[in-house]
Image (cartoon, rainbow, N blue to C red; front, side, top):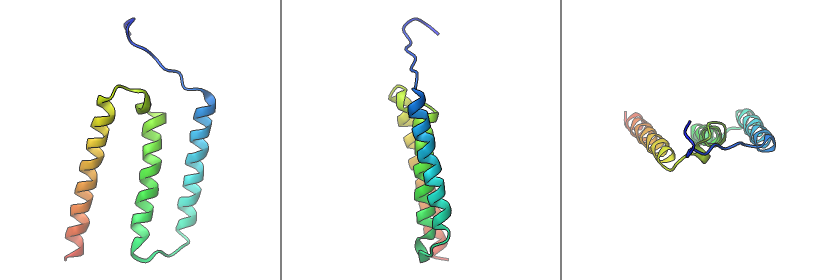
Length: 95
């Protein structure tokens, strides 16, 4: 590491808060499986999973603290994944 690189230290309080939020979202995910949303079951599950993955990427993988290039790259990969997912469901719905 060179002298011009800055490191960041995330406080334990932030880490514990993020962990608690992830545990709560996991509990919500489990609770939602007991409900019937009809055609929206997959959407609800994907939104919850996407929210949890965003939290993990931002805080536990430290993308929140990185230079702007890394979040842009991750966002473009997520957009590409969503596009492929959309095309797949679009194709599946017309079979």
